[in-house]
Length: 277
Image 1 (cartoon, one colour):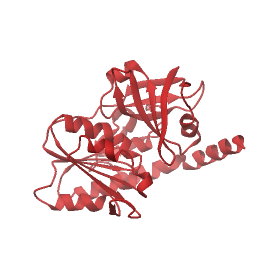
Image 2 (cartoon, one colour):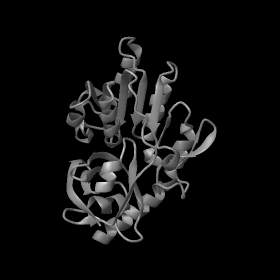
Image 3 (cartoon, rainbow, N blue to C red):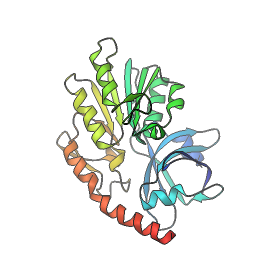
Image 4 (tube, rainbow, N blue to C red):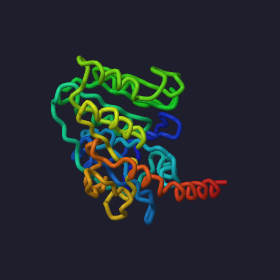
């Protein structure tokens, strides 16, 4: 059993959970994830390690309660624990000092972006981070990112905080400015957002990395749910990624595959809510 040290709601349906897992905390690298399971026979849920404290022996997970499994996980409060936490898994991000980089996060994708942006800053890069949400209450980790990023730009769809619109608006302005144009861009968030960023950077040839966490299901490559075509070859996001060159990803196929589990999750979430009544 892995003890839950804290569980705090930081945005609607989004929980920041600290879990005691000393071995994982000592070994994890930016971009890697864990698979958690609440109970014997329960759903396997892949979650990016948002942060870690090797001295305290804890890892930080960001949980968006959008399905039956994540809702059950998000409901666990200290001093209870999680039955299984396996990891770290996945290929770590290749971190280099390339100069100017822009990190783009949408919604809960900002949690996945956080360790990556921190690692890039620690490597000596000039890091500009753009984060977005539907409204102010859905923008997460802004203050935490500001502690090590050179600039943090916020967008909201309703204009309640920062620039009104999508993250692609300030990104386009940066790309168009020769003095600000980055050597690399990292995008993590909803599939449509990552696809839009990849198309936005394609004409200028800026190296663009996307994280395909949103399509991972089992986390081991056995279920095939995260199968994706990259540069004409079949890859699995959980074992070959989760990060890939955004200009080589077949986003049209990816978006179709992502919808495959929506009906099932809706049914399971409805059953879980009915059982609580």
